[in-house]
Length: 54
Length: 231
Image (cartoon, rainbow over all chains, first blue to last red; front, side):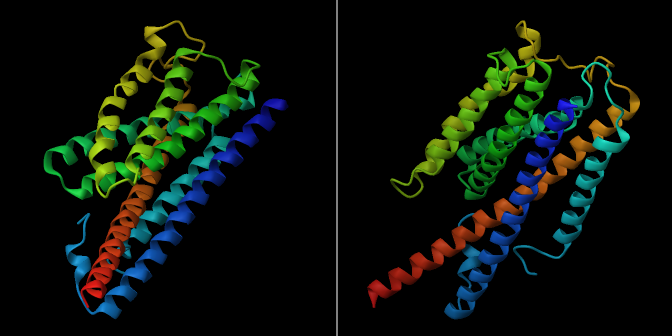
């Protein structure tokens, strides 16, 4: 029976961490995306097209 | 939805989440109970994919770092940085899940076994890589020095893979390749590995997009500051 507790503990920890990180990245991606769009609109330039990382 | 996170990504996200949920159900419902270890053996279906991704993520770092040094394009640095963050999370979860399994089966949380020790070394290499990459003494300095850690650190990956054959070890050897699994066990493991690989790809897509957008914001803010100073 104690083996089941260890199994549940490992599963709950792993799944929560993975889905928590996935949701965190989704939200951060949307937030940054909104920021970039807002900055592009306010500056009226197309700096993003020549940005680093592209 | 827009260029940074297009609508087709929703299909990719949905497929990954559905496969992850299918893997979760298979671990508890489809896979049979192992006779000698009992229920705790099911940790194996999480532990192996986590270990696979922590090695795959470092392979991506290694290749990206070589590409960055060869071509000096920041996209390769972005990929390596994203892979390091994700790899560290998967490596940490792999060590924790292995430790929980060890407590149930061996009676100890940790032992200085060759597989465990080399995996812990990989965890420290991940930390070192991210520390060097994020060292912000000078813009671009981290991106120039981090590949040294990424390329040298990769030497640990084949050592981890071969550790159970190179040294006497408590860690179970590769029973997958020795026909030690029944068909339902093998099918569950394959579904879990595929699901976790898709999840890694999804997390990479998001993380690289985040790095790219942070770069755009940094550049736009620098440009704004520069024009303000000029004015």
